[in-house]
Length: 159
Image (tube, rainbow, N blue to C red):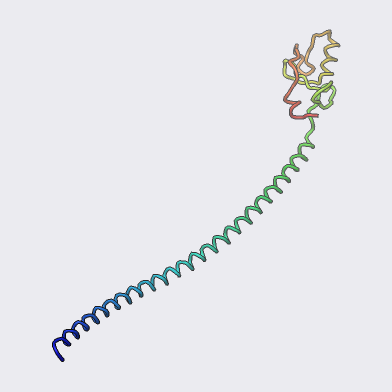
């Protein structure tokens, strides 16, 4: 073997060594990339599982919300019906003279005296006509004048 051949062989050996180092480097990089790929695939599976769990929770929450809305509506309707029943059982305010219930207009409209007692318009007119315009409250016997309509009663119990 000549010097030229030895030189070529040396160059080839160095090139082979360089190639071997490069191949080793690529293999190490591939191992790292494969590990990263496995880790990424594992994270992807975990994320998909998390998404599935969140979707299931979301569906359950939507069902719970619908159930609560229905329960609230039913409870509200039942409470309203109960209150209406209770309100209908409450006696309406009535005139202490004639004992008739007040009305929002007409002769049974509630009028209030200056002593703050309330009577229907028809009874007040009767009291006024019997005493020549001088009025005394039938309850407290105070000299009184008519202040006007008792809107607290007319607004609370419209007929």
